[in-house]
Length: 113
Length: 113
Image 1 (tube, helix red, strand yellow):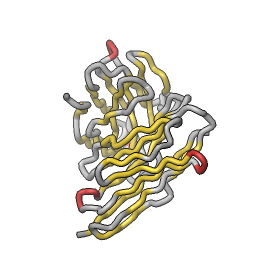
Image 2 (cartoon, helix red, strand yellow):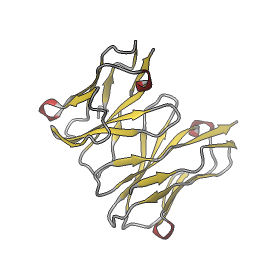
Image 3 (cartoon, helix red, strand yellow):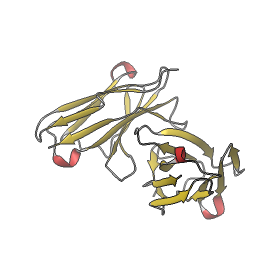
Image 4 (cartoon, chains in turn cyan, orange):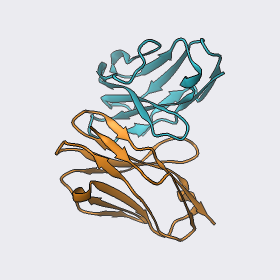
């Protein structure tokens, strides 16, 4: 079974630039998550989708972050404009449903300089 | 409030020692799920176990065992006869009626040969 795919693996941008991350969840998984993991910390939920609807985006900095999940499958997370403090690993995860185990991709390591 | 606390930031053991990683959680919900994930240096979060709040039986899987005690709101993880390959960051997580999967800060385990 294919896992959660994320791209790119690494990205370096200058502050105020834009960046986008892509996630392809495991086939059939209704729930998709985007997490931000700052070095030395646990993952922090940014946004959670159930199919193509947003379940929770309370911790998403909406002035600069946006995410969408078209057709309830792939998802894109965008940052515009990026700040230095956005440097982190962005993890995408999916699960069959909200209370089942989430499977994570390898993440995208973003460095903002 | 939902919260997961992993008080041990770093643990260092010598190979073949047993080691226990502590996890304490807070929730007012009666139905919830607890998880453990392993994050090796590659960065991907690997699912280890899911336990629902109504099942307090301890579980053993090879060298891994989990002790769930609702009375103390703890879900501790023990690795028996640790190996160098066990070196990683381990996260405990809580899923409750908020619909969010909340992670602790993680415990870095270093197993020395």
